[in-house]
Image (tube, rainbow, N blue to C red; front, side, top):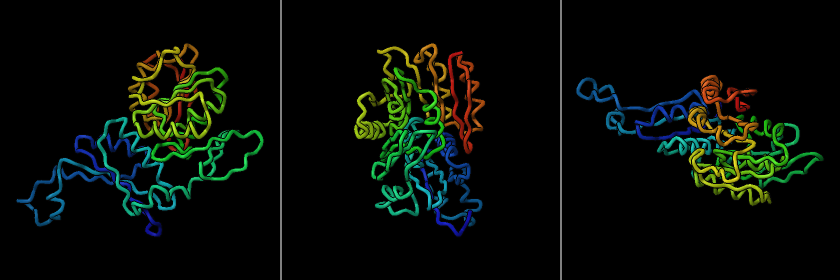
Length: 308
């Protein structure tokens, strides 16, 4: 690690039995993890004098995983990503930011969140920033708050690029795991007739509703749903489904997502680290779905999926 830089330690503590799941989620942000698991240390009688007393007396029912973020980069997306993914995986994790003043962390990242151009026309603009719109641009103003989705993460950018290519008028769109609501808002701005955004985290749903209201859109609704369980099918299957989640959850959704899709519908699946891509593709194919396109960016990939 470069000692000339300042770093922020992002530490998550969780019950020991959830350690593997926590490592899997955090590895999606960074593979260089520090894991604290003292469950196997009970050797005080043998060589206790060689082991720090605090380690010997540590709570062996919990574990902690840390990653280190450069202090010159915003960390709100990392925190929101973990909150969202831990909620989806039902991981009882506590997040700590070490090296950041508690009273400052919620707002200091805003200094690094600037207008972001994605694809040909989309511009994601922070709600607090002034931006002069240029002809032909589609402006999406966002305040992600504690929800994942500023547009800066590779997974979100990939889906927005695909939305720009895919959305057509009259489309009905469902976004599963909506975070800040950014994908549903983008789809509506691109001309989709109706967008329904869902997240298992009530905080994310609240943030998404606020962003939708601030955007002035009337054709986007946001509700709590555990993956597909609460997705509204009263209007029939959807033309387009977005799932910017994680590999394990997309695999879990694969057997059921087809019945939420029209025969010619498209599923945009993202949040997949490249090492897990073939596993996700295999699960989709086993569920009679066909991957027709794959986009990769900096260790992440997004898939364009249709019914086989």
